[in-house]
Amino acid sequence: MSANFSTRHVAGTAVVTLQGEIDLQNSPDLRKELLSWLADRKDVVVDLSGVDYIDSSGIASLVEAYQTARHQGGRFSLAAVSPAALRVLKLARLDEVFVIHEGVGQALKSSVSPGAEIR
Image (cartoon, rainbow, N blue to C red; front, top):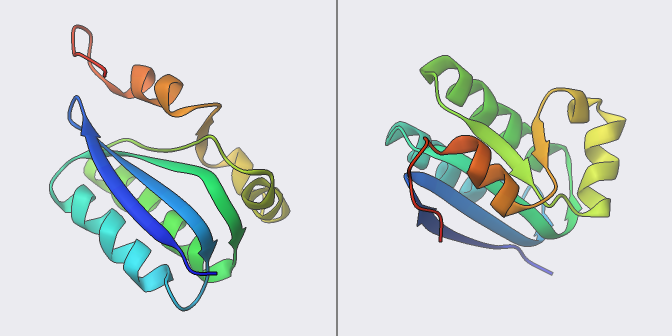
């Protein structure tokens, strides 16, 4: 199974939705996608609800994006993390590093400025 990435924009935040398996074959594309939004100074929320599998290369892409966002003063968070992805994050103790929200809506509410419209 391969991975699919889609991005939508909500109130200045890029919501990147991942589905399928994130592995060495497609993690470079994920890295490129995440870093491109951060280069545009967008806050990023990564929806992991549809991730069936993620390996260390996928985790490395998330960590690099997180570090880039912090360096630039942006916001980077994970939302709706699937059980499979959460197991890997917990094994690496990254559940204590990343901001993880129960859902995308919750992540968006915490990342937008007051008065911004969320759809």
